Image 1 (tube, rainbow, N blue to C red):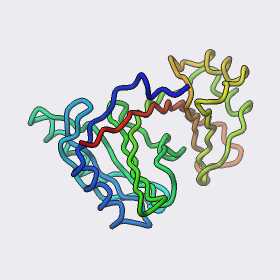
Image 2: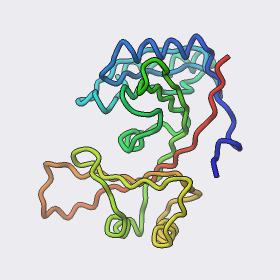
Image 3: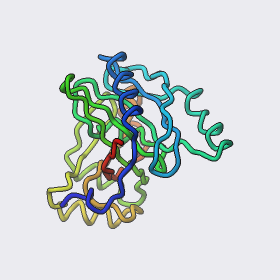
Image 4: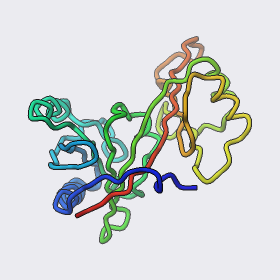
Length: 216
């Protein structure tokens, strides 16, 4: 059952959507990024940022100067209501990398897909991260994680597939609260770390909730 029926829409004026699409096309094949000024679920302005990630083909990091604009927005009574980036060759859905990089739970994450260049798609999501505590080690041992990037491991639980009983008990034994599919469980181990290291990786559960997008 989809969550979109009970999730309020975000309002992205058509001219702002077009600004994001133009930016995405100009930056392809690399991912582009930026922020949106607004209030609540209403976007008022697109602010282009620079992608300063090391691997910009499949990843993005908004430059600090652009992120600092949120304080200017707040001084004017607005807020950084959203963060956007592009997927030049894949669908407009959060990747495991996006989940790992979701540091702003109050922001809406907009993804512009150019998978079909003549038909760009913009979708919006709330990504809320919780660090798993007790029981986290069982997650690593029990679930089929994929290494999606060097050192980054992810498990994805779709919304239309029943959660395995083993996973349900793991989540309940952790400090994760109120998480329901779809969600990612992700952790990172530096490729440069010693094989015999006793360091336990930080394991995060990241919920994925989609907002309908109204372009008007």
